[in-house]
Image 1 (tube, rainbow, N blue to C red):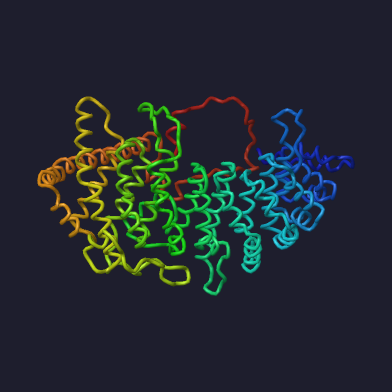
Image 2: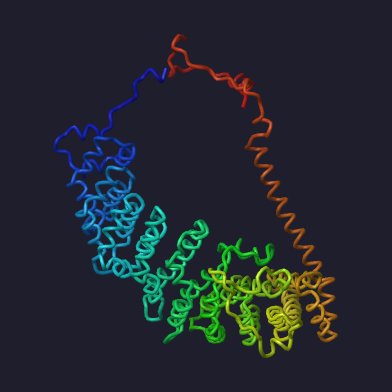
Length: 602
């Protein structure tokens, strides 16, 4: 039988190693060289860890291959070299981490003029990153001696591999005291300030984008680390700088200084949005707004809001006069003036600011009529669902605001526990429309009133719905924002029935002109009810189709549940036995498929 044959063969690598003149390249040509390395083939590891081999491996990942080589094979050896150096084998890690001459060759890669070869940059970053994790003290000591290290990394920040290298320095250093030492070193090198300076109108877009992404990742990594830290642990100095009013103000100054560019606006706003995150980002996190109220994972520092507030008018101006964009062809025709990424990010920022409930921020948004502008864009760009979702979040933040009894804290707090600085005495129209003496509730009530009076939310819903019905009645296409408009309408109805601003919305609806109030009541009782019923039926039918498809698939191709609950004794395993009469496994035999099928058990 099969096990009687001795299938064990000596590795071809071992055969090569028997030769005294074997070269590194010959070994790297073998398909299983990496597998043998990770399997701790001692002879191979001893060969690879020789000085001349290590120098050749490092040279391969830091030197541009000859241009005359076939493109497919140009980076074959550099790739294998990188995999060998990062195979996480102690003998290689020890050799690479302890030999300054090898580290110097690696470091010299950064001293080249930009741009770096992106593939070699990734090999370099992966190798250094592995050493940071495995030979931490040696590598950190080496890098700290290099005065220009951070400057060189930022010089090449247009290569995403350099971004990865910085993040490894922040997240992969253990133990905690050493990590804190590294963070202080990076802070002394003014890493945050230097990254912020790269987000500027005059800078290359790729560099801006990577600098922005690095800052966002630092914020998230530092906050996650802070959540896991013990109470007596020192705070993260990089996060402290990022959340400082001076740093945020510097970022905003760069964004709006000189000629505005979409790249600096978008990349800068992404950093602000990350600073304003009160829970993990993503659709699920944002939609928690509906289900979980305002429970926070992180607390927004007042310094961030104090820095943003003076620039709200600048963001407002972007909604009115965005950076110029060329007309684009879409599936629904030519769009002469696209919404643009800058205005979309302003909408995201407004939604995030409204969710902070900061008094002065909400008052400024109210005074500037920002929601009115966003609703204008909501209806103008009827096919931009990204925008529709942000406007829906803004409406939700205004309508779902917790009452003063439900709020655990009277205002935002800094990380040191001090209350956020807010205007104690709200002024202007906000106070006049307020329904209570509590400043925060007063400002919020002003926002609700603004939404129904100045923005005319109810009238806009009714007019848009009637216009869409007319378009569809003439054979046209249903507008792309109708789904979000349905949810906004349902949000208003739900808050009329219950919620923190129920009585105020009831009064505001009563203040509508009589004909408008009648249209609204008919819309809610008939049109919206029927739309909700139809949506529920369609959703249920969609779920039913999925269930049927799944059931049919199991019936035709799968196993029944009871098939997995058979007792073990039903499973018969026929053991091979040397004593059995040997047979030729290749001998042709007549097969009785009927008998075989009857006896088969699953």
